[in-house]
Amino acid sequence: MILETLGSVVLGLALSWAALRSLSGRLPSRRAVFGTGALGALFGLYLMHSVLGPGHAAATLIGAVLISAVTVSLLLRPRSRRLSRSAAA
Image 1 (cartoon, rainbow, N blue to C red):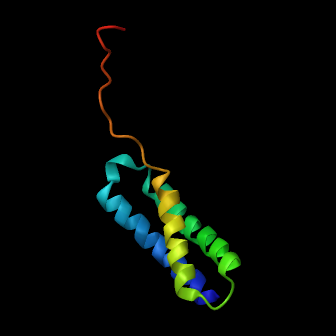
Image 2 (image 1 turned 30 degrees about the horizontal axis):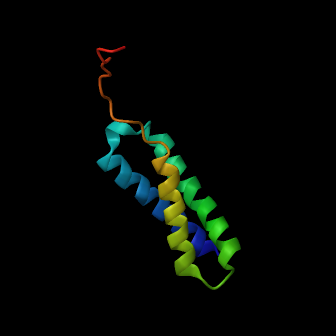
């Protein structure tokens, strides 16, 4: 269980790092993204471990990374576009 926990945190941090490299303009501060990635992975590990039970380490880690990706994606801001009013408004 300790190795699963450490592995999920490392994978969550790696996912956060990759998100920051590719989408840095659309994400908040690095600290918030890394914290969200790590905590999302821990929550995903807990959730998947309680759903699948012991003995499914690979599936538990995959589920933890997927849940971490979802939580990091919630931090994304929309692309900055200038809003224009229509002529009818």
